Amino acid sequence: MHWREIIRRPVVTEKSNFMAGELNQYTFVVDSRANKVQIKQAIELAWPEVSVQKVRVSNMPAKRARRWRRVTVRKPGWKKAVVTLAPGNSIDLFEGV
Image (cartoon, rainbow, N blue to C red; front, side):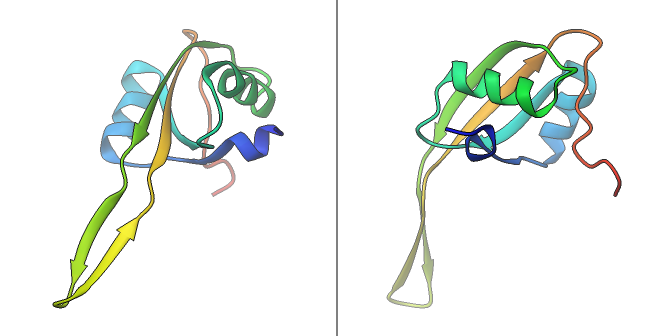
């Protein structure tokens, strides 16, 4: 797989912003078929000046929600990767904004 297929998008929440600033960890939504080695290689190809120390992966479950009385909506599951960078490295997710 190409690295653009592996990394879908960054997760931007209060917790992920704290982790990026204080702990040097970045959170991404990744392809569900990707493993840790592929995710590490994709991050290092996307940002060549960055070296990855550790990758943690978790599968987020599908969710069901009820709308109105009988209509049920189902959101699909997805895979989340938390990438820890070496000290002194950082990723600028929103450059030029």
